[in-house]
Image (cartoon, rainbow over all chains, first blue to last red; front, side, top):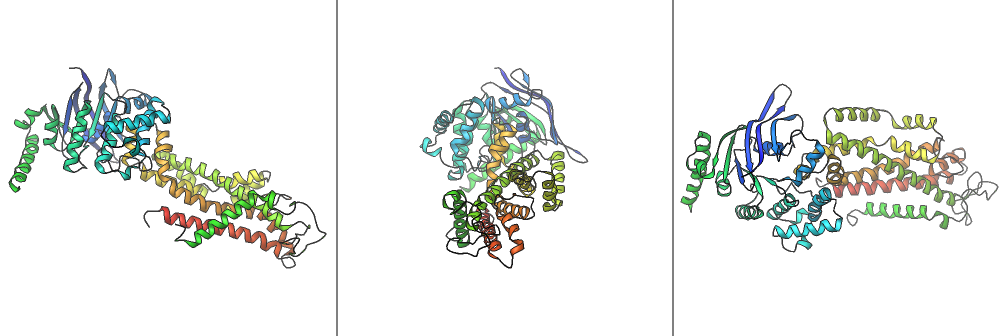
Length: 264
Length: 267
């Protein structure tokens, strides 16, 4: 398998007035072509920061150290203009909250069309055509009709489908999904997971839900307080966690499941 | 909105009538506004509906032509203020940091000048013509809009859709103008409406002081100036242009207030 993304000794520090907050510290992570890799950890452990730093979307006072090797280049060294081409075209991202990740004043079709207009310089007509095709691909009925609607006319699950369509528009090499199902109810979660699997894109899937990740991913990284504490295949992590934190995460989900079963 | 708010409807009707009258002035004005028709001031008669001024010119025709000048000065001045205010506010709010600090302190300095004196000072250095009036009024009234836009940008830039726009590779300029600005249009429209009322007043004040639109071109402000000497003998010379100013400004306030209520989701 070919290495697509290799993160080496990555740290993200926020420089506050009198101290440095180390949001991500010395993280190594690899994603191979065709793989779905999971990144698990509790809220605030640095998962999203890590995801954003891959896209180089960390704003001052934050700064990124280390190396992000992407198809023969270190993304931390390239020019911002080149980075803008990488974003959306080679690496793209699905965000957590479908209620705020779509621009409220854009028609849904325009939001997706924007990607084509930006990266390909496509005409309005062409990009709308493609936007409708993408809406169809993410299973939105009447795509041509619905493309004219505004985000508030869509349900949460459908909005997340739109976000997926936007991220998938340029057929990126890597899709970073940052808690894409957290804001949705259980049935919608399942549907979005199915959809993501259908796309067959290499994916870095971020979640706090270890059970969900284990079902989806081949390999898992467990993150705690900015560091990777354990990595391994899904089976290894679930069945024989080596790190005490991982063991706790796994057992807590098992307990919840047991209780849920009992109460049924 | 209009059904609930009779004042706004009233304002809108007045505003439309004034604008149409201004645009169609050459068609509907009974006489040439600069033509000296009578030997002396005449009170309103059938021939001269609003009377004539000290030079014997028809006031109805002058007030219609004056509306063209006053309204177009207001519109252009507001456009100038919008351009400067939006640019400065957007950059300040979006980039933040030291740049924001510098820009905002500069804005504060501009705000702390009594603007009419600033305008007078600048105007006295320039040739007083209507283009300079437009630019000077615009260039001294952008601060409110800049602060407003900055505030909107500060709030909007933290929203996730901005992150999402960056994640599809949009550049900063594209994010500012295509993704964030349309979200802050509502308060900008309100500010522009109210700003137009202010611009009409400033233009009138400037022309009244002789630093604005120059005679013989009529504007509501310099018609008022002409009337000063005859205030007791020929009050209509002051009342007519004054009435037009009041109507235009009040209507803009009514419409602006209604828009503010309507477009502000918090109320």
